Image 1 (cartoon, one colour):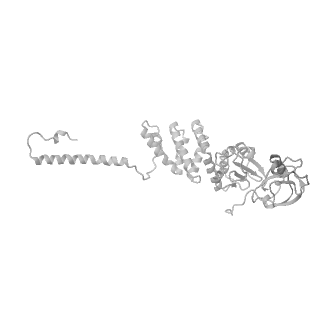
Image 2 (image 1 turned 60 degrees about the vertical axis):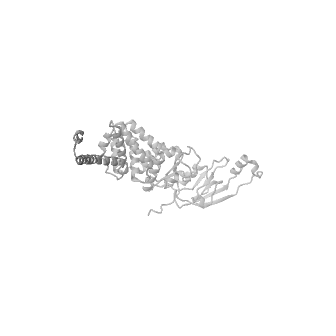
Image 3 (image 1 turned 180 degrees about the horizontal axis):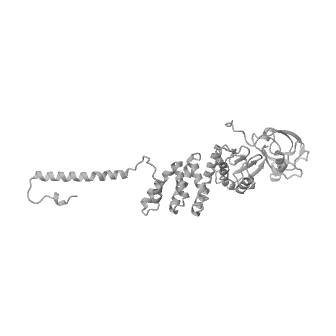
Length: 383
């Protein structure tokens, strides 16, 4: 700015018109100087909402460790842009695997966790995020591995949803195919051991048979469902004829527990057994799955199966062993009697609500012909 005395009028008398000219020139100069400042202030007050180009990642990561707080915050904001595309996420994953500074690793994992928690489970971006977190959980650096594992544990339902959605795309046999159905009847906070109907959509049912995808990716996704085992929300059926190796079967049992992994034949009768306290041998039906082989044959809860194809049955394991020898579409004959065990238990618990127990009579036997079905209905979209 020019020195003030240049525009200062001396005390000597001057014409009034000259003083007015000087004042007008001074006002114009001040307006010229003030215009850029006003424009800069307006630009700062109105953020640019148009999506800009993705900044280079390397200088951005360096800026995360800058001394100035404003520079670090600006870098964090720009870092979030990389979660919007698979390519950007892959760059973040490569940076995380390159052993970055602790502050840089923490910021990258924060971006990944936020993206993992808010993105739809069927998008390619969230699949890429899941892969990065799964790999980071196996990292040699303790802080990265521990933080990634904690993220996957906190967001375990998202981990399940993403894995199930991809398994469905790989045409892996499972029910329900929509992972959102898993949480409709009972939320993810249902206590471990909560009594759930094994045939409801609250239980994820995996059928590993000859149609199981041969891709190693399918087995990797299966392992990511281990969180369901802690809450009793998964049943895995290892069906005769599948291509899993002995090592893979051992891995599944170690992840999910022996009680969640069951070896079965190609056919499914569709019954749940009830503990049998009678002196006679056989299989007491607790419940029958709707539209199953047993349901279509007229079997119901409380029926006691005493023989199969004229051969006496000892227990449920005996029935399972014999069914392994059968094929889909085959017919079997079951000898069935109506068990009175439930009625006797009801009398013990509520004696006033039932009439006196009649004299024991020999239960009527009947033969039931069952056409055996597979474990799941065929996919109509498959040729």
